[in-house]
Length: 457
Image (cartoon, rainbow, N blue to C red; front, side):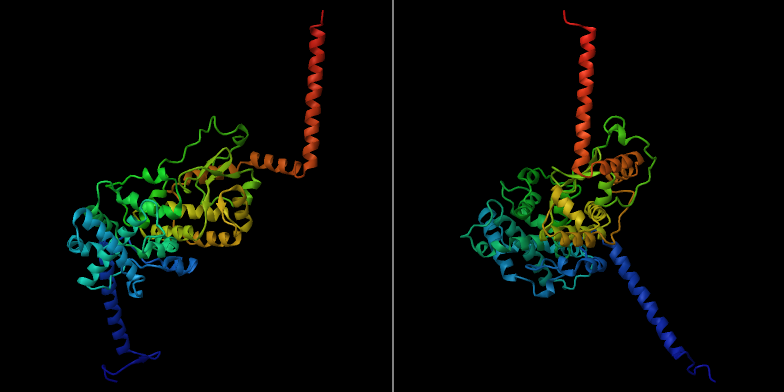
């Protein structure tokens, strides 16, 4: 048979193999170029949500409902484009009257930044260079700033158009502006804000946090004391809100020699290895560890002292679900940011084994939500399949101290004895009566001895 004849082996010809090898070589080159291009994007900060998170939590938690921002959802009809131009017009009227700045000034300001903006997106932006891309970033940035200014002081007024029509949509706007896939770079907002800022305006960060506070309802002083960090500015609005929730003060260290009750130090095991998960609520309670709410500026400020896990109260409503899930998605994708929300999600997932644990947290005042089954499902799905560095995260002291306390044999046995002894009210009342009787007997004996030693004259 001639050398150029087709040889068949298992139904595949030599020509097929050569073509397959050639195609695979091309794929290697294409993917290598793509990987090099992705690695070169040092400013990359806006990502498509990983498929594993979409599968665990449902895609609708990451998709805009009212307004699309940026290129990822641009082809979906650019939701509420008319409202964007209405708020753009409001913002334009403000800057024209105050500083004489018009549309052309915004276009000239952002035109040189197109390449830098594109590099912020992990996926290739399909919009071609030119007027369409420039219109998108100017319109979206101006819409956001116009929205912030409209809601800056007393919020929407019933007679203010279009706010009278959009007042009921405010929570949806807040949610959509905090979706990971629905972001534009923060420096784009900052550029337009800088050329349009009035003397009495707060910083852009404070202005944005005031807007989101219409839904989050944090104390005003917490918002106003947030300081811009020029050395480490937020990369987008989601990162801004996430960063504002990170506690400023580290967790307070416990003083082992004096602050921990004596009986919790007896027979303490030497356990310096960080455990990956802490036990769930019912196991902690069985070992004598209780939970109570803690007053703090952020729900992330979890603490553990004196055998008590202190957790700031959190309202797990739809807005909080959107915020937590998108913060986790951002932290999973962005290597250069801290993983506070991811660790918090892991912490909640460790505590909650079933709806009964959620019910206990609700009764303690830690979680505010009446649908315990739904909250339990949400916590499990949010904390599933997350990548964390177990040796470097902000709750490491809490995890270690809870684990040490939980593994303390004496404390567990003492708690078990107390539970068995006082499981009902009658043993407790019997013990109380016996204790009172003993104290009275001691007092009577003491009085008798004093009377014998020092008789009355």
